[in-house]
Length: 178
Image (spheres, rainbow, N blue to C red):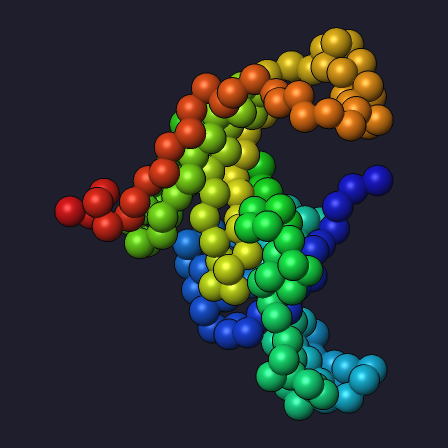
């Protein structure tokens, strides 16, 4: 079973489009315009990822929907979770590709958090709604010990932190530009 699409609401579809197509490189390929069951109507925009016609991220632009002014599109804020808890992670094929994405984000004026987690390497920024977005490449292999530890941790009640990341670096777009 695979992933087809993740659907989110956007406060400003033009800013969302500029971010997801203009900066991330996902291609807008389809829109469905439909009534919303509770009232109003919406446009459901589908962005194809990496030219794959089976993998999308989609965004709703809602119109004339009850309580629309109260909608919170930042999922961590809406669910009262700490920042970065809910985030969207997209894969890349190599660390070189990850660094290319990082440099593009910086050139677009976005701050970037880079973390080498020792088994995967990630970069993070935020979309126009404040939702954390990640590009990630798996750099390690999983062992039987990893699985055994993960299973044992399901019922762990004491704080026993994982090994520290090999790298944690905050890239400031303004400093990189200047």
